[in-house]
Image (cartoon, rainbow over all chains, first blue to last red; front, side):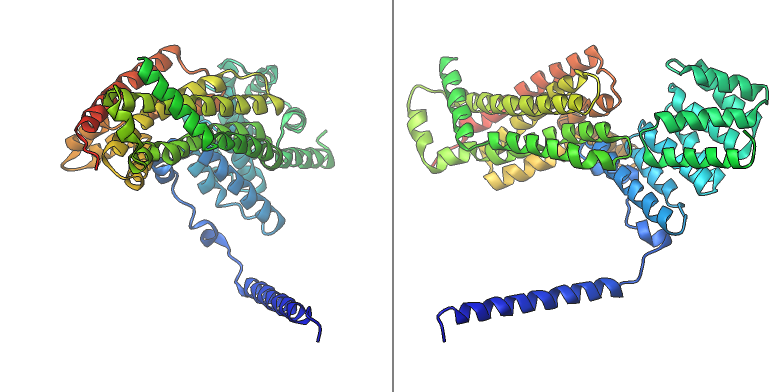
Length: 223
Length: 253
């Protein structure tokens, strides 16, 4: 028997135990039931509580919660299209950083358009307006969702007129506010704004959403 | 003053010998790595995420530096008995303690400065316009850490390094939640006034926190910054006076 035999035997034994350990882990993972619904994020703490213990780093915690939001959205987008916990996630982020505008827009449109839960999407955008009354973006988003989601020109006009009065708004806000106020050209106007999102948003999902709605408008022969 | 400066310089050199600058280097590598990894995952919010997390880490790394270096500064000298040699020379205890404080704040200034500049450059590298607000945020963080260091020195003058570290960590957390403490006091049926009083004695570290403003690209108000720095100087003077008083009475075996 060579001198290397005990070492080889030991290495084989270690490899065998490691393989058995890995098999057990994979079997245990498969045996776990899939988590759905409220239980999925039931561990996710209240934003006010996280703010209290965040030791002054609530904005960074909001960023981490943003990653959790993206993960939740991506997972359900690929499976059941059920986004109802997005509202809770947006509320947590808003408690941690009320000025994180990208979150309100993403969650508002995801719930209102893709999730077909208009009231929930609108509630998120209304919170954005309440937390950031001096910024044109949340007013515009709320008006745009009223416009494309519920076709309520009166309410859309209320939000868009506000957006058009705030500093820093781009020219297309004035145009939409004018069009909506005149209750004219729904399809063409919707095209302008979805195209705007398609061209300017850095969020891949929002761009894809815009592309989908533009296709739908073309298919229905509105354009 | 000359003796104080010599002790400060020595403390600074000693901290460098403990390779604290590796913390800064580690931070920079982490930041560049995070910019590469987190940015594509953040759906258009990458630059914001990297800036927020970077600025938060400057403060956290600084706090850990205080816990690692600051809490053992006095203890090591006592244990090695080198403090006897030092204090037998014409060096007042006051000068010794203030020199240690100045040396540690100088180390923090170098580390916080380098880390903040790293955040500033990575922010620019990620395609954003120059945001000098980030640098002002670093000034706020340094003031925050200087206040925390004054408490650490007070704790290490009377307690063991472990306790001093635990207290420092506790003060960092509670100092950032002083406003919440007052909100909590308003909800209490009794004892609320005591809590409000305590909230004015504890260091209010939140006044040095400009991270939320900088995340939005907003400039901290000059008056806000000036008042925060004035508060830092006066508060540190107060705590260091108490620390010197306690250190004067301490007996070394």
